[in-house]
Length: 233
Image (cartoon, rainbow, N blue to C red; front, top):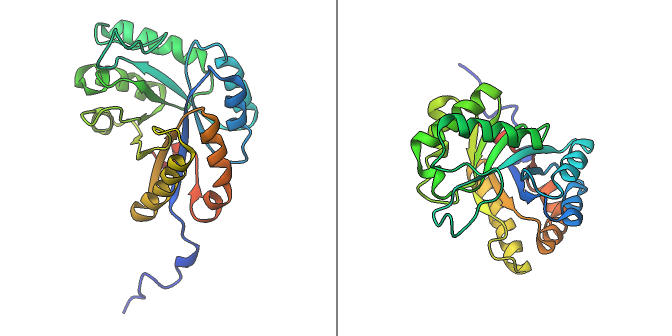
């Protein structure tokens, strides 16, 4: 008769995994550096072509933090809403999409993966997302879908193509009030406890860095905080 599987497993030592990505780095040097200098294994999604892209990338690399290219993509209300320099647009053919992606990656050396900035229109387009994801597969990069639209096909296409991928569980600071961010961090930890893992996305706001600093001990004790690359499948 075989031994029960539970024997030898210390359930008390098991902790769910949480990853936190800080998006939009490159425009707020002091705030960017505050996040990067936290004693936490956060992941940093850095915009290409921003005034402080190089400074954020260099400091994150120096501290051994995980870096992603925060790739601008076409939103629904384009061109009224402008996604920024280096954006991938639905009007682009495959060669231009790939060329733009490569130029952006050169702006963020050391990026291990990519997540989308805006992209509520682009990430709904199966054909265009497939072109981008096939290129990420060639480059050995992972993809995290920020889920800026409920109709995104990003994760589904990535799995189909064989790109390691994951998707955002919770935005931490869509409401930038401190109490709201606090509540979202608690929700993130609860989601991880329910599912085994969860991914939160925050932004370079003073309130966000303050709340992450406040929850630093809880994030170390209640969950296992990991770089987002550990949650891609």
